[in-house]
Image (cartoon, rainbow, N blue to C red; front, side):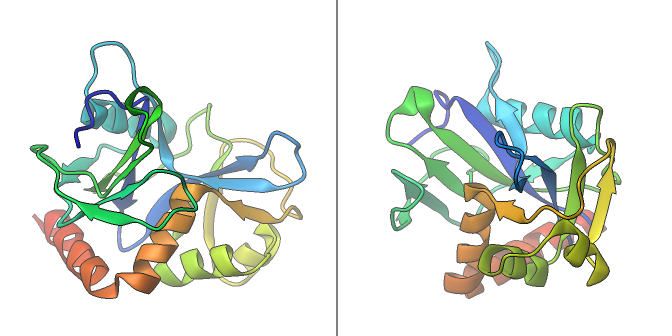
Amino acid sequence: METKHVRTSGAYIMYKGLFPFQVGPTRKGDKLGVVRLGGHREKGESAQETAIREVFEESTMKIKLVTSPITFFKKEWNDTAIKIQSSENVAPILIKGSDLPASTAMYLAYSNTPPVPSSETTGLLLLSREDISLICKQKITLEKFIEQGGKAMFSQKINLGLPLEPFPQLLFLAELFEKEASIMDQVISVLETGMER
């Protein structure tokens, strides 16, 4: 399965041992979505180029994509992930959606550039493995997350009292840490090695 027809792509980025995710109000405004960095592909872009551009536009981070040791496929977000072969020169860790023009790809990346939320990004959370598990398993407000030592930065005023709502890409990352621990240890090692170069 290839990524050349995907509609959106993004990246799980490691920066100093933490994973940056966007945070901002959901459409209803009653929760704060915790969303991956990434977005829609522009004409002529590869999925990889989209991920690199979108991450930079949202966080000013210059990222280096790395090949995932394994690629997972999910038809729908609540389906069980299937391990597949990727023929890409930089294999994504996830391809979601069987309708290629509406599918999404997620890559692994690292960055030595500090994240800064852009004007189009309300804020960024820098999440540890423990933070990811916490947000995905418990209802926690942004205020409580910060009080417990969570790292956050904002470009706009945000209601700290709203609960954090993990979006599917974050839930998938939590699932990987829980169910594919040996693969994720390998992934972390690859990302940390890249950062040290």
